[in-house]
Length: 223
Image 1 (cartoon, rainbow, N blue to C red):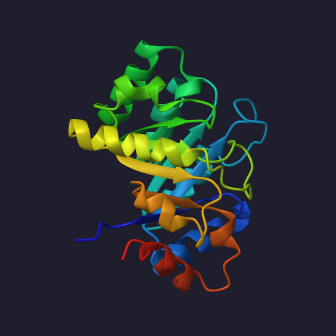
Image 2 (cartoon, one colour):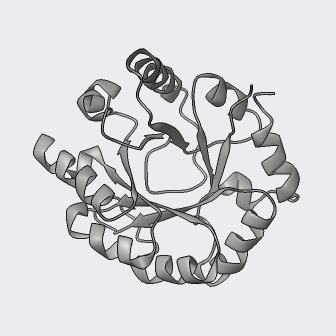
Image 3 (tube, helix red, strand yellow):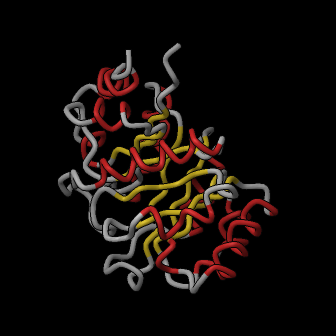
């Protein structure tokens, strides 16, 4: 039986003033989650939406808010985004100072009632987070450098997806593999075939003339 592919449109690059309508439209046309790209202008150069916008989306859009914190000191923000209505909160391995901080982040997110995700940048190997795989709900593989929508998918990410999938199967782990950056109709099939469960789509979704068709295409790549 084919697995369910989760399609998660990103809030970036949609203008903030259009986000509520855009998110509603994407969910109505078959998307599963809304991927909230939160950037603070320090961990990455750009600054995007914050907890106020996430709170508005959570209140006005009937859907799963998949919050991706690309911020410095994410431990300081976990309670804020849980209160804002996050369903999932993903933090970056690179933004946390060592094992204790990472374990604390995962536990705190889960204690707040959210699914806990751990993300790695393109230069970070899977081996860096291997010890945390038994505890997380989501592993987010960045297939572009975080911070800017519209980048080309980095093929080096494919081996990470395959490695995570193999570790999950070998050890009976339950985390979802989420991939973010440069995903489109041409590469989605390969990404899913290697083990990805969640496809975060930014520019390709925002610019798709027929979003229903685009979403259906992504969801059918493993059929």
